[in-house]
Image (cartoon, rainbow, N blue to C red):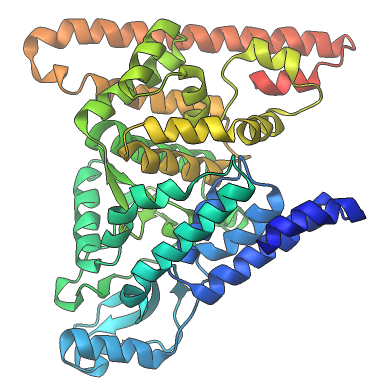
Length: 462
């Protein structure tokens, strides 16, 4: 409420918009840190939508990725005694006194098991289960109030949709099983790492896994210092997430920067360590295949097919869906005539803000499982923003989507030739699209060399 009033009054008395944004972001950060739990989760979600929110929000709320509410060491001891019936020193050789990370639902400590293995011990906040229902009701009420003041920002229904999913995050045994399934699903990728679970030291509120050292995925300076190829790292991250979305249908819904570490493999190239498997989404086969088909038709610019597969996902506007999925302008001619001096990034922020109510309505009609799938896409995109060409990103995902589309058909020998022809056609169309894009760039580069001011247009096709 205070934030809303600030936005109403401050501009009238001459306050800068950036200052108002920063005050609001600081207030939200303070509220999240004081209340912890679901409030942290909400703040992390806001930080991931850097294609909509001003940079003041994003930069401030990014602190919630791995620096959250911390508790005293005696809370860890009390939970271990309650869950195992033993004191920490009876189960572990040692536990460091200070947590190495404080997340939305738990603190993580580094320790050693009795057999000498270094482990990460994730301990749930003591009062989290007792507060869950009350916190959900409070957040729901606050979002309803906000929707009355700002009708376009009508998102209280999202909490109701995700109630069961969020409740499952409180069960660390389920999280451990999710991690094991993720490791199994991605085992063909040698650069994918999921910490092994120590089931003898795991309960519903305590999760113990092998300790893996790594560098946070957004610490670009440190990664480069250690010889990590950033482009290779990003391609691997896209591949892993696309494999889950388009092939397995078991999707990590919270791959924010605090949950992704990078280390060097035996080949001296990047390995990706996937942490925190509490929040997952099961994408049904029907939705998965429709999404694969939509992604293929989106890259091929097959508008008729886009409409068909968007409807299968219960979406009426395929172009809006395309921009929500890729966070990149879809129809270039419209952009050229209507953007003025906006960059591609500024254009997408403006479009998202202006069409927020339409996006919200679209999310309401889509299968529930698509919400967290889109969260995955947005979170990964936010990690790579400024380092990876969006066109390259969604083309790589398109190739994986096409393989996902034909994964069932490939099981029959009679389909081998038709599938191979379809894949070859797709690759040719993809190459043709890339070549046309390159020609477009060359054309505008020549115009720019001749003195025409076309830099803004050039950014949209870059």
